[in-house]
Image 1 (spheres, one colour):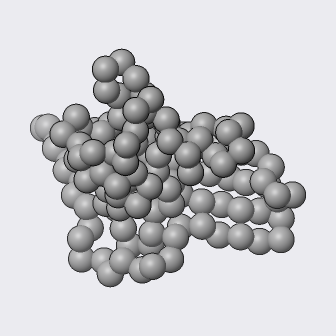
Image 2: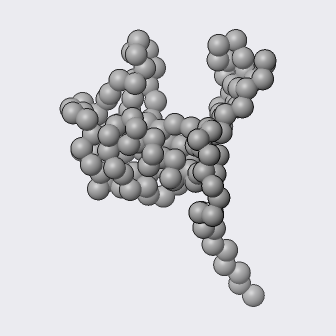
Length: 129
């Protein structure tokens, strides 16, 4: 016998305005969602204010929010663009030190469909956070 499983977003959960981020005196743990958007062979990245680090646009998922819905919300907040989320590309787990605490991050990295709105005057496909 063959079985087929389909996982659908749980839309019946009430979304909270609290991010999936937990802090103790020693640890910070968070869940993020990020988008991979490529246009004309260029990858859209964001740069921190001092220009020393780059990252894919995205952010923390809120409790009760799907990773796809979180990515739509974060992209709108960060770039001004209305996006269409494509398929899940990879899941990343990272460990590092952040402000004197051990950080543990899990990120869902998803493809962004090419039907995207204007991204706030992005000429080089790099923008500052």
